[in-house]
Figure 1: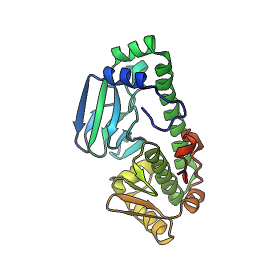
Figure 2: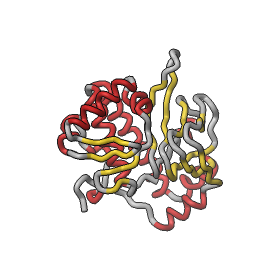
Figure 3: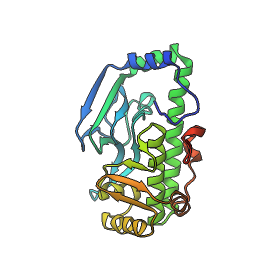
Length: 237
């Protein structure tokens, strides 16, 4: 489960979660896992890779509405709803663990603390969605890109998937455009602007943050909504 929370999971609870997994699957990049409206009977825990939730417009263009990274429950909200109102797919190769909803029932009935952690996971998703709306609705193109990459950096850092100021991020400029409401051409221009301004470098699937503070000011970014532990904040040892 998410590594960025303040409330820890006990070893016993980790065992319960692991024992609830029915199977583990490896998925290629660009694979659709769930279609909008399809009934769902499993909750999906992302063990590695990057996935997204998205919606397709009538003109064929896609809008990402959430990005999922290692440690995320991708579709836990589908447990009470029994279906999704959006599509779910992989952006990179991914490994997932599938937990039947019947076993989620058992967790809720027999392990109340673990159930609260799962509920908290959906609340963190809601916080990310609110920030996503703010990012697209109020920031300019450069600010959106700065905010999105800093958010991703902090999320990956929280689960040990970032080294110093660098993280692997195998998304294309089209992917970034679909997340930010921009064209891939505009994304390219903004990446060049940030690189030439000495704020970050994004080359061959690797992002290196060069000036965290200036990037945060540009993107009006404050990671408080991620509810990170103190040791997971930027600059922590």
